[in-house]
Length: 394
Image (cartoon, rainbow, N blue to C red):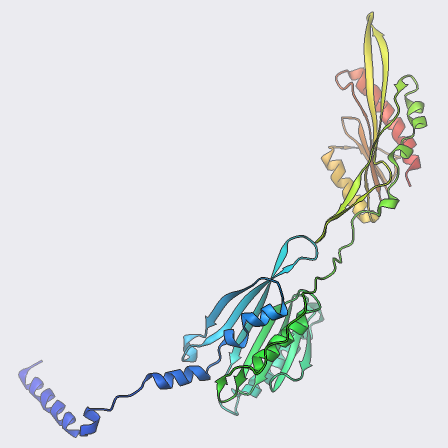
C-alpha cells in the first residue's frame, strides 16, 4: 500500500468513527446467553420426550439401557436432540437367552409457519398419505389405523417386526418406534407416544408432564408357538417289538441268541424352560448271537450284534424325509435297497436305514468285519432281517 493510499484509508476511518454515536462506542453490557437459553428451552429434546424411566415402568424388572441422543443436522439451524434410542432386554419365548428390543423416538419437524406447504398439519397429512400408500401393498403386511387422544392427531402403523406411532401436537411432529415382542407391544408404544405429547406445549416447548406414565404390572412372555418336529412319546414304537426274538431266530437259527438288551430313550423339548419326556418303550434293542466253527481243526468263534434302533418318529412325513436323508448321509449309506418301506439304503458296515411314513429305523448286523466270507454272510442276513422288520413298521 502506498503512502497516499494509507492516508486516504486513515481519513476514511476517522470519518466513520466520527459518525458513530457516542453510546454505540460504549455499549451497555448485554446478556448474550439469555436468547440462546430461551431458544434451547423452546426446542424439543427427544430424550426428555421419551425417557428411560418410561420404559422401565412399562418393562418392570427388565434391563433398560440408553443409547443416547442424536443431534439434529447442522443445516436445520441451532442443534437439538432430534432422536433418542433405548434397548430393552426381554425373555425369549423359545430359549433361555434374552432378546434385545429397541425403542426410539424421532422428531420429524417442529416450528415453522402456521400455514403453507411446510406447516405441521400439511406435513403430517403428507406423511400419513405416504404411509397409507405403502401399507396398501398387501405383501408388506403393514397396517395403518387412526389413534385418538394423542396430541392433535395421530396414527399407528403395525408390522410383524415393529410398531410405529406418528403424532402431531401443534408445531411438533414425532414418531415413536418399538420392536414387536408380545401383544403388549402396541399398548406400550401408544403409552410412550401419549406421554411424550404431555411434555410438549406449542409455543412454549418442553414442559414437565403432569403425571408419570402408568406402569405395567409385568412383562408378557409370548407363548412358544413352534410345533415339535417329533411325534408325541406315546406314538413311538417298541424297538424290541419291531425286532422280536422270533425274527432273530428266523435268520440266526444256526446261532445261540442271547436275550435282548433294551435301551430306553427320552425326548428333550427346547424352549424358554426346557423339559424332557421319557419314551415309554425301548428305542434300541440288541441281540448278541454266537456260534463256534471248526476251521482247519481249530475253533473259531463267530459273534454278531443284531441291532434295531428307532432313529426318529417324526411329526409328519416331510420332516421324516428330511431326517432320513440326514441319517443316510451321516451313515454313508450310498446303496439303495428296494422293497423296504418308502425308501431304504445300506452302507458297508451292514447297516440298513429304512423310512416308512414318519418312522425311520436302523437295522444292523455287526461284527466279523475282517473276514470277507463272514462279512458277506452278515450282509445277506441283515437284508433278510430288514424285510421282516419293514413288514411290521406302522
